[in-house]
Length: 618
Image 1 (cartoon, helix red, strand yellow):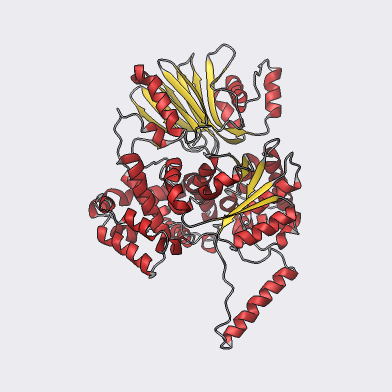
Image 2 (cartoon, one colour):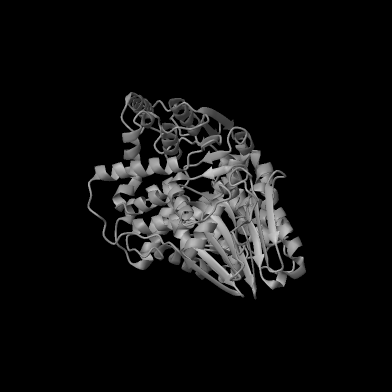
């Protein structure tokens, strides 16, 4: 995995060179990764990169070598800002985003961060002031973790790189385990190690002479009163901001590809990319079980746009080779049943260096907006509504009652109230009484950076990933929308239909039908009605049209993966960690294998926790 490593403080002393090298090696998953390191007695800075963008060696220094920067990620559309800096006398030696940010910091101090549009993390060392700054983008889409003790601070894009310092002692965070097994992700800044924290989105961390401070430079805000406007205006603006976001992130001279499903978000990205101009042929990539809905719908979309389309079969045994690497990349924060990106990534990287994902489109545009959110409740009922809706999206694995059975009494006593309080904080930090806005806030501040981002991190191990839905202006526009326009992704669908009516005729996985009435939709609905009537007339042998998902872990865990699942979860080591009630865990596995329950998501989360322990703790 790529990213940053570094430290500041005198406690590292004469071991600083060795420590920085070991940290970088922990991130260097491939021999061809580019590694840049710098250290002196008090500070060490490093970057591990793919060498595809921002190729210039780092750190990059200012003119008098008093300030330097290392960076991972990229920023977009800053030509006018850069020209303004040139007009003020700044000299650019490279075309690197990092050098632009360095001079922006020199000119504006910490206020530089709010002027950036992109996905990034930077470390700036001000040698004159003896101050280290760590800064990430508004949505925290390049994770950075840190550990501080006394006058020293250590940071890395991966928790595993912080664990290479064997002089430090670390403690497994039981609250984090409970959060992960409830929500399928962690909350706030927790990691699976108590002493190590995640830099929260839109944060500036400063560290000087042992003093650590973290502040937010941007906050997600919802209007108290929404502006009354015509729907046509909203449609026009959404179309504009989508086109602008995609154009800002166009692949340029690099070969690009869209990770294309049969859903809505990735087809939106494909449509706007296809409508623009690219210097190289555009590729599309789809994986799944042969003849699944995603495979069929994506192929039709690719044919309509004229991309070079590639389909890769997702085989159940991919997980044997992928899971260890996946847990190393995602730090145990990603359920192993969500690691399918690794199954075909090497094949995809033969055709493209820049990958586009529909990441965050569903969360931001209203996929999770449900009718119960349009009401006012007391505080306790509000939390219950959010939990019920999360459960409906498989966003709750082991609820509070299930955790009482899963965990040992001592473990449950240590964690239960903490998890409830953390969820309450995650909802009400939105600072709005509108439940629909609270849910968008929760998704963008919790589920997106703590869960959905895991899939992006996997792809980043082989290529640059661009996320047009994360564009600053697009996000700001969506947050200004009255919630009703986000309900069932209404405005997004209408804008897509208006801009790309032919692509809207291709069925999508949300309904299995085209997005607009057409001959195809009429024929598909007629086919369904005829089948229903024949079955109702007693012809039960007439097959029902079933939706076919791209993967089927429920069946895979019962068949080809059964021994693998049981060997991990029913081992003496797993059963005797002191976390879980062995009888309950054994029954959970038994019920799934016998087909009396479908628990692949729960089992996947438990497998992830166990394999994380084997890789990082045992």
